[in-house]
Image: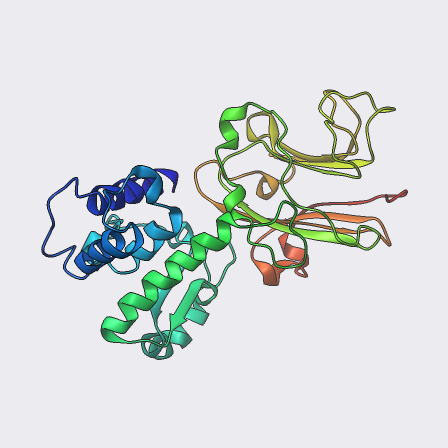
Length: 299
């Protein structure tokens, strides 16, 4: 996404600063934008890089011909689990809604849950789809420092954690009612997935037990995807509350080569901690539980 955003910004700069030839196909409806930008906003002066702000780039992107937008050409066969959203006209959605609701992906999600239907049609749909894209990515970069609530779009937190080699990264999330517990859903590809839930925002890696804040550490597919376990500490060799191995419960291991939806729930009233897989509707499905533990002293 960063590479695509950078490419779009450079294309917009080149166009508005007259550094490239005008493409009669791509620029046909934005040539007036450049004239207005130079004559009315800049009062006739030559644009500089600092003049091409993020808002200018977004406005330009919503006006260009669709052939000038970034296109992603998928191979002939691609797993639907890799798709984030499907944007289509509402009229088309109504025709295939029944089939979409009957299609369940390997991750547990319904194909229907991925659809965004827009009421516009024809040329208006192209404009509406680009507006939706702009707003979608704008929301992802404008999250507050700490997000809270039941429905949080946290996909923007996926920023190459695999290259950090175990270094802790605090996600901007806070449990709003920790006395009741929490439910977290996420999608990940790979193994050795680690999530820590702490009572205080401080480092816990290799911190002695008597100095560590109250915490739960859930690890999926550790030790070359041979174990999934839950601990109340983050130290090597520390006591484990409950674990599953590839031998005893192979479904509890991670999926190294494709994305999988996971969820973690904790009921602080009774101390029930569960790790499961599947979509939102699977949180109450006992068959989707990978690992569970009853904490005698919930915190």
